[in-house]
Each structure stands twice: as structure tokens, then as C-alpha cells.
Image (cartoon, rainbow, N blue to C red):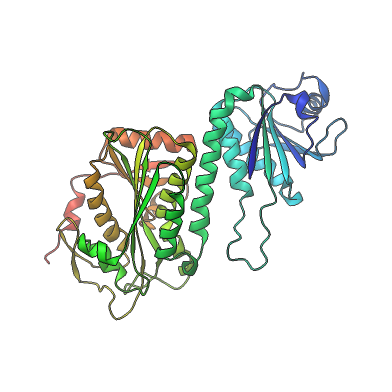
Length: 417
């Protein structure tokens, strides 16, 4: 999808030819504005058809004096700018999506802050995303071009560039997250990682079973041993700062399909276990965005990827394995495989002497029971890092909630064996 930035006020936006024109209307904005769009906003306000509440909108078809085929007036309300922009864009898209618009113009009735612009662009891309990879009669995304109209385009270039990079990264992650297990094996995921190394400053190394065995990653190997698909350990590096600068390390869980192993999961909804590699997909998405943005930071991405399957060699409840760090682990439930592959990846991360390590994983459904589908669980040993991640989640509207890590919990990890 192509994103363009233009200097557009309401008067200029009325002349833009498009399948749809979305006008994000702030309280009190636009009613006194000259021209056709200003008149529409004023009339809609006066009639009570456009309340000042985020997500309330009004669609018009070929209104007089406006070049766009469809016009959606969408209220921003009084909430935080980014949250309001996302709500308004998502509501507007619901009004026009059935028409399969190819070109959309997005404009504000008044000023726009960078966070709101980014939220609006990401929301529009998110809402219009279409998965097609395994569909025999796929209908690709109709939306091809988005024109973002602001009062001063030059002042918003950096904000749009960040938003577009985020979109590219999110859609790369979605693409691999949505693929079924036979279209997203560990080998295929490694090839996806290698494709990212085409970008400047990005390098990729893929380790196979022999290299992983040489590293003595016994926990990781134990999970993979029941599958015919060979494991892969993916190491991505982005060098945007000096070599002396400690990197941020991202570790992503890459179980491309999780049966639960011998501790077999229920059959119902087991197909969704293709999503057990979404931590890995998130890391890949970050590197897709890094390659486009080229920020001055060093980042390492570590992805242990394998299947958790059953055959005569599969890990059994009660087995004891030895991790890369030399610790022995009694496996009571083979469906707790995520922590086994991640502990070896985390031990490997130490060799980079990192400034911080962030682990991303679909680790346990119990967290959804605790927090619902609204927030992700955040566990942290560093208050500063926890605060920064929480703030980033709020800014991206992908919120988290910090969970406890008290001294009492390690007692539950002790074993007699």
C-alpha cells in the first residue's frame, strides 16, 4: 500500500479525487470553515447527526462540491489524541469497506499531533489488511493508496515515516502469524528472517540442529525431538549505532505448531496453535521496521523455532533435560514447552552483554484468564524497563499490565529430581 503526505486543508481536500474521503473532526473544528466540507460539518452538527464522541460518524454519497465519491465525517471526541484518531478511523472504515475503495484521502478538520497521525495511519492499514497466502480464490486488499492530508506536510514527514515502517512490520508479522503450520515451518520461518537481511545494516544467521547441539541447548532440543521438522535458531542483528553500544535483545518464541506433545492439547481449537510462533513473528516485524527506518540503535533478535509434536522420540512427562546454562529441568508437562526453548535463547542472549532483554511469547493461556484480551501480561526484573515498555504499549495502544515476580514464586520451581 502506498502512503502519500500532502498539505491539505478542508478546502483543498474537497478537490481531491478519491473513492472515499475521511474527515476526522475535532470538537468545534470545521463548523465555521469555508467551502463545501465546512458547510457539511456545520449542517451535520446543527442537525445533531455528528455528535462529539469518538467513533460517531456520518457518511454521504457524492455530496455537491466534493470530488470524492464518498465522504465520511468521523468525530474524534475529547479523549487522548492517538486513541481518538484510532477510534475515528476504524469507525469510518466500517462505513466504506463494503465499497472496496482503492484510493482514500484522510484529513483532519484542524491540527494534528504526530501521535494521532501515526495512530490513524496504522489503524487504517490494520482495518484494511487481508490475508491471501493460502486462499485458492483470494481477493487481495482493494486499498492501494492512502493520501494523508495535514496543514503542513513537511512538519509531519518523520511521523508518517515511522507510521509506515510500523505498518510494514506489523503486516510482516501478521503474514507469518496467520500462515498454517505446513506453510510456516521452522525452515520457512528462517527463510523469512533471511529475507530481512536484504535491508541495510541487517544481518541474519541461522543455526541448525548440529550447531544448536554444539551450544548444548538441551532444553530447546528436547522440545524439537518429537518432530520430523528440524529446529532452527535464528540470530538477527541490526547495527545502527557504534560497536561499543550495548544492543537491545529481543527474544521471540517460535513454536510453529504446538500439539502439547505427550501432554496433548484438546482437539477443539488446536488449529489456533499455529499462532504459537507470534512472539517470533513480532521479532521479525520489528526487524522489518528497523530495516526501513534505520534508527541509531543496535538490536539483536533471537528466535528459537521448532514444532512441539509427538512421535516415539518425543519428550515425556518426568524427563529431565539440561539447559544451555547447565541447569537440569524436570518436565512435568510437555505443553509447557515455551519456557524450555526460551531459557536456552535467554542464556545465549547473555553473550551480547545487552543493555536490555525483552522476551515476547504466547506463553500461557492462563494470562488471558487473568487479564482478558485487553492487556498482555508484563513480567520484569527492572522497574525502568518495565515503565518504558508500559509507556510504549500505551502509545501504541497495545497495552500491558505488570505481573508480580516475588521471592515466593521460585519455591514452586523446586523438584526432587
